[in-house]
Amino acid sequence: MAAPRSLYLEDIAVGDRFVSGEHALDADQIKAFAAQYDPQPFHLDEAAAEGSLFGGLAASGWHTAALTMKLFVSAVPVAEGLIGAGVEVTWPKPTRADDILHTESTVTEITPSRSRPGRAMVTIETLTLNQSGETRQRLVSRVVMFARAQG
Amino acid sequence: MAAPRSLYLEDIAVGDRFVSGEHALDADQIKAFAAQYDPQPFHLDEAAAEGSLFGGLAASGWHTAALTMKLFVSAVPVAEGLIGAGVEVTWPKPTRADDILHTESTVTEITPSRSRPGRAMVTIETLTLNQSGETRQRLVSRVVMFARAQG
Image 1 (cartoon, each protein chain N blue to C red):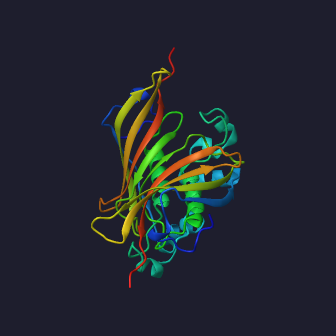
Image 2 (spheres, each protein chain N blue to C red; image 1 turned 30 degrees about the horizontal axis):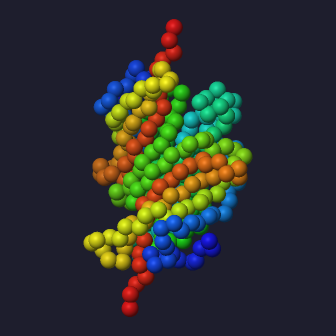
Image 3 (cartoon, rainbow over the protein chains, first blue to last red; image 1 turned 60 degrees about the vertical axis):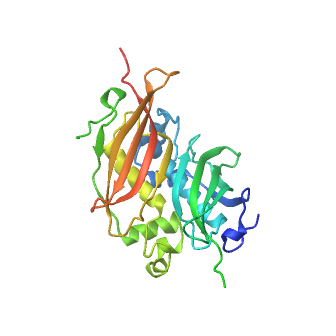
């Protein structure tokens, strides 16, 4: 669906889906992120990665997560901003240098706040997929959303 | 505890703790990460952040997570590398520009693989704390660990 400028609680329902644009990864990006945040050989060096559990250069899972956020933010323009209270992340397969990533997000649960009217906790499942439809990451986020101001 | 060079399954037990070094954050780092991965006003601009739910400039949760990985990798030198199968993350309070972060990791569970002898799934809880001992992130990771090669 085409995303409106700002999403309020009234604008979403369980089952709604949001598909992002794409991000083309490459080995330089993988190594630059890893050098700063996850300096392990299998994220930094092709030869070292060959002999690792990954069997080749793989992006840090946190790099996949950060790129997912970039795509997710542009695809799901939540009013007041996308603020996560908590997340679960799994990485079923490593992200590779030739991956072109996009995200597909689905609203799975909406729980209105009892103490604060006009506010809800919204659960969104976001799959990060490559150009062949292979899942690189599954993210479940709990996000705060607001109703439009009354009056 | 002082971390040995390479941790194998035989080297750890439930209850073991690992404390990292420190990372001093600042506003420029927060904005640089946000510009690339989480370009929302409350991560990019002090004035815009004042009026947000955060009430002031806050680091992206994914930035806190990435910095946590940097500290965690140096503090817990798992043999064959720190490879996460899945994680749960919560951010009880926003990370701020004047935070000096460190991590405290505790082994909470060790589950030997039934199908692959010499391998186990190890659950590690990692708290990311600032210089006042305030928790900025709670991370629960499931990590693959190996026994020393026999013979």
